[in-house]
Image (tube, rainbow, N blue to C red; front, side, top):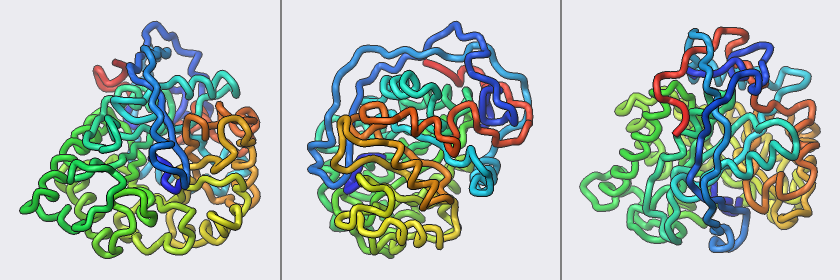
Length: 402
């Protein structure tokens, strides 16, 4: 977005491991999972305040699978990536549908995800959470309380994505550019110590998912080529150093081998998509955060040549995704979401997944969510077959639900 805020060990036979997926409803559900949060927002190339629109809601409870699957082998990061790399060779069922659930601890819930299911039939294949706990315009907290819902999603056959609107190490507004960006890697500075504190909390949340057997599409420092976040429009080499520092801490120090690292610039900046790319050894998936009313090529104004951007990202040699997607101006009821999957089929056929944003940008609050979710190219929850028939494993004790 022009700054769209973004941002297995245990699987039931309903999804991630089965060649012939079994419907989730085939398993008894006796318990409920409750998300005690609200719902929120966001979009591209708009004033930041317009994208912060939380509304308080009460508990939202959804069914949780209470009967565990049969024990079996584990699913690894490599399994997910191998599966993703083969999707482009399928005749159909080749693009995973995704949906943003909100900001952990403040707006995350499944209200709109359930609304999407009620409209179209299936659940999306991928559910995303942002570890940023929005308290006001200053993003100062890391919150991973959405983890229980993500674990349940994974154990019920879905993929999981985590991003974070990084807390500013100055404690200030997330849109105020950090002038001394290189200090993030210097523990001798106040900025470096604050960043390490955030990294520790992020590592704790991602470790909790690892311990539950969840492979995570992890998307840090997104839309770095824009100028709306404190980490955006920085010196490219310094940005790469910060990415590498973050990678080394989470992977080498914390041992998080369950993370699929996602590099995601914004499509509204067109020409500098790969300037910040830290290298193929520290990136697993590349994508574009893209909000446009014309997914077939772009609008010629803000998103000037989406075909060329897609090809540029493919040149990095990684699986490609639309890591955030939605309309730009035709929001709140007027946008036909089938345009996105039609554009993917006709112009961006190597796309592995798309992540639709929520609120007024979302499929359930616009038109033709049924045409999007039931397109023959789309893979929804219950249709993901990572291990080609391997028996799904038993969830770790206490890994699912609240």
